[in-house]
Length: 251
Image 1 (cartoon, rainbow, N blue to C red):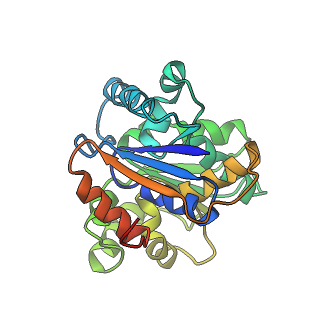
Image 2: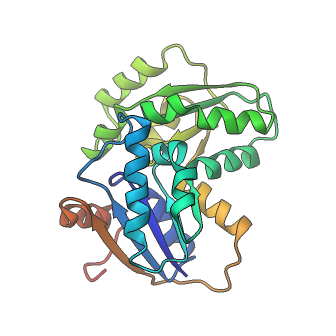
């Protein structure tokens, strides 16, 4: 199995990390549109155009499956991508909604949805949760977390102050949907701020759960081939990938 993983930048590497941990694929090709990141502040038409270009990029690699690791693209452009694709495409939003439903039995659970402005404005998570009969959820655009993660600020006073800015009026949720693939890197800080008992829905783990429910995997691949591509400065993306994924020098 050869899989393509697409993200607007580096955040989708957290999804790749989950895929590597579960050893589902023989080859993983990652493409980050680093020249045009962030997508979260762009309009829907632009997001769709960029997403369709990503589909065209992966047609060069004869992949079996594509994962859209960007929540913004998953929320706004998945249907358009599927119309022009010759391979199946899975988005992190649909996987995240399913993972939330599997984690929470009580349909009245208090759910907090975090994401970029474009993801939150799409209401994609709310629509999915409503279809599954959940009743108690609210969403917040928390775009400031993205540059914090890219600057490797995963804890500390500045992050705590930003939590207070965003969440001063929020009750402790039963679950938090991390609706941006950067956000798993501040998971510990979020749990410390809210509660250790709060369930965090991680896009990478949600994708793995979705894949294992919907596809058959006959074997494990403990040492998959991993290739990095970027629309700008691919070596910088590769360096971040090696660091986040704890890769050996020869990977």
